Amino acid sequence: MKKAYIIGLMACSLAACKPEIDQEPPSPGDLDVSRYLAIGNSATAGFRDGSLYMSGQLNSYPAILAKQFEQVGGGPFRQPLLPNGDKGYPMPKLLLRNVYGACDTATTTVPEERGKDSAQSATNISSDVPFNNFGIPYARVIDYIRRGYGKFSSNVWANRMFRNPETATPLEEALRVQPSFYTLSLGNNDVMLYAMNGGDESPVYISDGNEFRTSYDSILTALARRNAKGVALNIPDIRTMPFFTTIPAKGLKLNASEATSLNNYYRDRNIPLRFDEGDNYFIVQESNGTLRKLRDGELVLLSTPRDSIKCAKWGSLKPIPMKYILNTNEVDFILNHTANFNRIITELATAKRTPVVDIDAFLKSVQTGVRYNGVGFTATFISGGVYSLDGIHLTPRGNALMANEIIKVLNTSYSAKIPMIDVNNYPGLTLP
Image 1 (cartoon, rainbow, N blue to C red):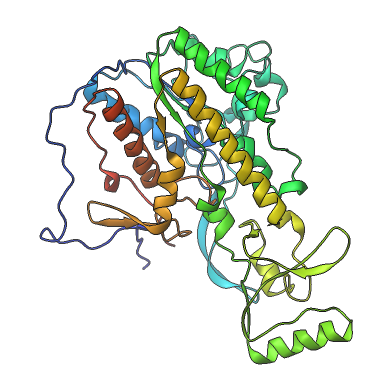
Image 2 (spheres, rainbow, N blue to C red; image 1 turned 30 degrees about the horizontal axis):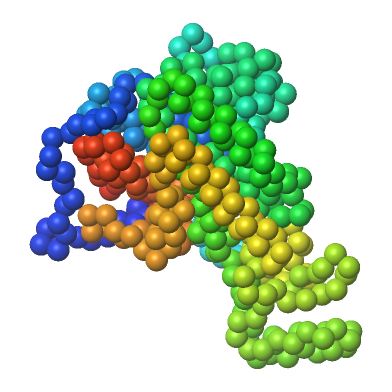
């Protein structure tokens, strides 16, 4: 009989672990959280394990925050919940399974079989009661002020949420809730869609800086006109995410015989590549046909088929396709735009007296390890407890940690006393 083990759970005696307990009575301070609006994209919506499904939505960081806000005057928090239980929509979510085969014997991720209710999931569920969680997966800052986005963008999640999908902007639809408080988490997808699809191989390019500024300012201005208070979240470095770091550039492990065989193979073809026993850089092919080894700082995407590396000899006898690689120029391009967008977010938010939650710094701290009530968390794929199976979005525990970062800023900036969340009350990943 198999036992389920929750990732990140560690043994802890009462003598060794001192619970983090709030001593002061809860207070909203200068905030009115009775009508909380969460503006954002996939992370806000509750995207997890490569798809959107109900338990992910129920454990999104806005839902976790809303539950905590109940102690300081928070009101109802309505989400566009999917009707299909834990079946991902529209793509199947990822599951963790033990795989035994000629190419791979390991614990790995596999797509779940799709449910039969996808048509029902696509039904428009907007009504006279607006949604508090207006996280739209795949939406960029520049999309949030685009009229007709709900109808003409082919975004299936937006289509089911909008009351006026043909004419309204996402921002107009979101503001139907008449927010007294908001969290604004946009900008990730303005770089992420380019990065996760292989950089220049991606059909989606990074947003223009001027357009980003105009769109973000429009959103903040609309919220300020309604006298809503809130916080803005900045954009994390992609290198904090397991999707970009789990497979190392120097991940080709060879014994002495394998190294000799590869050296002979490339020497016979007059290709100047050299391999040694131990860890070697994977092989890729430039657009001009030149074969080369990966360099330090270049990233191999988690979407790279692992069985192709082992059995089809990708990265050794055959180059890894560039759609699974971010080369040096692409990484620099992404990082420069991320830094620029974060400067814009800070500048515009400061001008509107809106505090900024440094999610970038938080996720960088996760890389070296953080602890909550004796339990350790890292950014390591699967075992770290923070990231879900897609290597980009967070687990419920990861979302709870993120929500606590938001609460810290709210308490400091608005003289509030919102209790911290017990992260360990939320689930992590379960091993097969």
